Image (cartoon, rainbow, N blue to C red; front, side, top):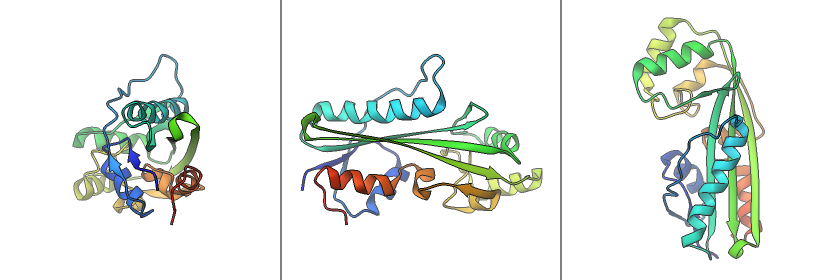
Length: 192
């Protein structure tokens, strides 16, 4: 089986990829994540996932390289990782009762450029109306400061939602495993 490399230092993506039980290593892609002028959130996620895979492929041309990126948007405004408690509370207040789209790009490059697979998943999270006290209790309990939007759907954050509209629930966490399993098989990996 070919060497598989995840072009990401995200602990969430690493944990997701481990679910497929394919041996892999991690290489930081070293790609800046700044948006291009006028770039839509979905386009940004797709572009960055490919750029990350390409960056690692340069130094590992014989490997199967996985690049991924996620951009969360509310009315075309990007929701970032809040990094601090006050910003987390502010973001959650702004999405109370709203729909937020999570665009997760994924690229698989292999075979010295002969295999180039791309995917973009859009998951919509519909937040229920949140009371300020609920937001405070959630932020104090989970402190999801390193997550786009300021919540963890795989944790207590699920209690903030009215519903999730998705074809692949793992995409919301950061890596669309349904698509990725098929892409890895195409690239010569045995999954499962």
